[in-house]
Amino acid sequence: MSKTRKKSTPGQYSLSLEKTFGALDGALDRSAGLIAEAIRRSRLSRDEVLDRLNVLLGRDISSAQFNAWLTESNKNRLPAFDVLAALAYVLDIGEAVESLFEPFGWKLADRKEQAYADLGRIQIEREQLAARDANARRIIKGGK
Image (tube, rainbow, N blue to C red; front, side):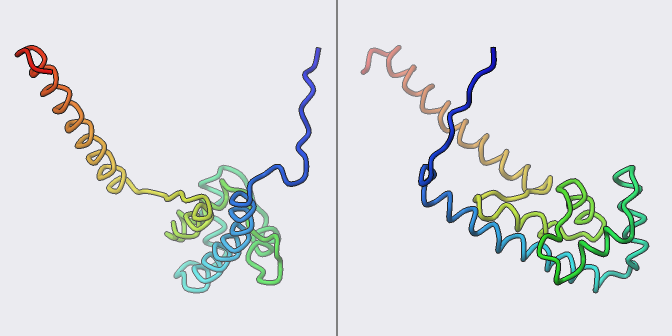
């Protein structure tokens, strides 16, 4: 027995979601621009970048496909996310990937930023535990 999926109706999604996905178009353009600029500035040739991508991904991306992704006139030129992430790694341009997350309010974090976030969460937990501790001690001493 298969479940039938409820079809969405026009206007079902919120305006903020529509704005978010509308902003994604601009993010895609920014990301593609960052990649194209990084390729132009790179000390690596396109062939060297492609070779490194192929090694990282464990598969062969053709020169034609790679060049199509880098063609300014190609509106659908961004590669799949795994290729984009590998390309950002090879070219050291995490901002190209991060720009794709901006419309959703997300941010990439390196290990150091993750550690700072963890420390912040730990501090908040300490403060909450200290408040619970103080409350429990007040109750034990007969207070309210």
